[in-house]
Each structure stands twice: as structure tokens, then as C-alpha cells.
Amino acid sequence: MATPHIACEPGDIAPLVIMPGDPKRAERIAKTRMKGARLVSDVRGIGAWTGTVDGVAMTAMASGMGVPSVSIYATELYSQFGVKRICRVGTCGGISKQVAVRDVIVASSAHTNSSVSTIDIPGVTLSLAASFDMLRGAVDQARGTGARVHVGSVYTSDFFYSSRMDIVPALDKLGTLGVEMEAAGLYACAMAAGAEALAVLTVSDHLFDGSGDLTSDERETLFEGALEAAIAGLKA
Ligand SMILES: O=P(O)(O)O[C@H]1O[C@H](CO)[C@@H](O)[C@H]1O
Ligand SMILES: O=c1cc[nH]c(=O)[nH]1
Image 1 (cartoon, rainbow, N blue to C red):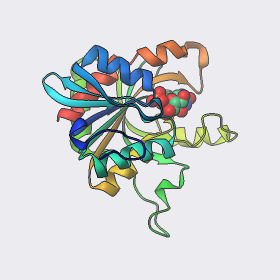
Image 2 (cartoon, rainbow, N blue to C red):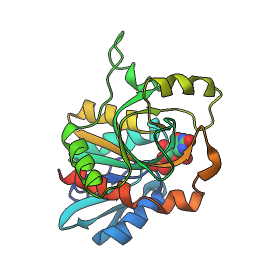
Image 3 (cartoon, rainbow, N blue to C red):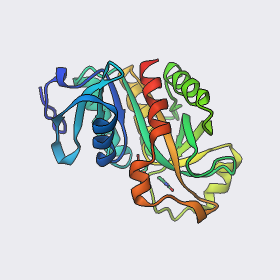
Image 4 (cartoon, rainbow, N blue to C red):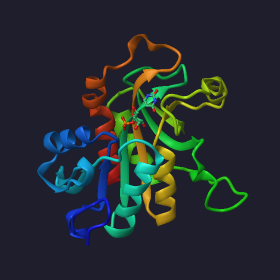
């Protein structure tokens, strides 16, 4: 049965979902890394492509940008389409000086300024964390390739253009690796559904050094390392 934002039957969506923010990245993943990918839903231009990756059924579907958008898709996928695992394949800005543009970050947890961490249980700030099994699968794969991969916390912000850049050094001091806009929302939805999630991020720019920042074309296309780690995490 279709939901307000996904127009297909439950059997059209695989239990394992690769979820970039950008719909063009989802289509590119479907056309370059999947076999037999078919478009099963295209509501609001958010294509859901289902096929196989190395013989395993998977769906590639974008989240759009921000916690509200990823929360809509993740909630519908987990609750109405039988999805067990979602892996975000996204981009982020580097915060830690240990990370460089093009490095991969596997987000073990996500700090956030979104109300998603505080709204469910009054007086409690929820821990928003990745699935351990998915994280281990992704990290083992990425480390096996010799790629520059970092594991740790990221900051999920409700703002791409923030007036509070003054808080970034404090996040850096706490070991926060990068900033993006969806991981905390995805982890909260997985926890609510009793399901699993992970975010694997390519560093597209650095907040303390803009000299090597990726172009918008590169942000759409440079994700191979993160994608292979994500696939390993989904299959783990
Ligand atoms: O490249 P994606 O996956 O969209 O991720 C990052 O890029 C967008 C901002 O440009 C936000 O969605 C942020 O989280
Ligand atoms: O949210 C994001 C994503 C990429 N780069 C940033 O600086 N912020």
C-alpha cells in the first residue's frame, strides 16, 4: 500500500536501503552499482530504485535534506515497507583537523541541535547511535581498502548556513569529526522502529580550511569509498 511519500507496494522495496541525500546520487548508484534496477516510486522526484548489489536485493532512495525530510522517508520505510536497515551515504563538512576532504567518516553517533533528541521523553536527551553490526561491517570493509576512514561522532545540524559558527571549536574539542544534516534523525527513526541505521559520509569541505572543497558536481559523483563501506554495512 502506498504511503504519502512512497508510491509502491511493500514488496517493491528491499529490506536493505542505500540512502544518499541527493536524488541524483540515488539514481547514479542504481545505474552504476545495481543490477536490474527499476524505478518503483518517484513521489516529489525522490526516486526509489530496487535491484541487486552483488546478488543481494537493495533499494537506493534519497532522503532529501535535513532531519524532517529523512524522518519522513525512514519512518515510512521502516513502518510500512518492512525495511530492516538503512545506510545513509552522504557528504559532510570536516570539523576535526584529523579529517581531510575526500576522507570517509563512519558516524558512530550524532550530536544534534534538532529537537529529535529531546522531544520523545520529557527531561531525557536520547543517545542517537549507529547499529553496531552495520558499523563494524562498514569499518572493516573501508579499513581493508587502505582508505582514509575515521570512526566517531558527527554533528547533525538543522542549518547548512548557521549563524552559530562560534560553537564549532567546542564541538571539535569534544572529538566531533564533521557536520551534516540527517544522521541524528535517521538514528532516531531506527531506534523508534526497533530497526538499524548507519551513516557513512564523504568529507566534501572543511570548516577550518576551504582550499580543497569539492565542487557540486564532485559532491554528486565522488562517493565510491563511502558507498562500498555502506554496502558492506548493509550486508553485515
Ligand atoms: O550530500 P547529502 O547526503 O545531501 O548531505 C549533506 O549535503 C546537504 C547540504 O548540502 C545536506 O543534506 C547534508 O547533510
Ligand atoms: O551539512 C553539511 C554538508 C556538507 N558540508 C557542510 O559544511 N555541511
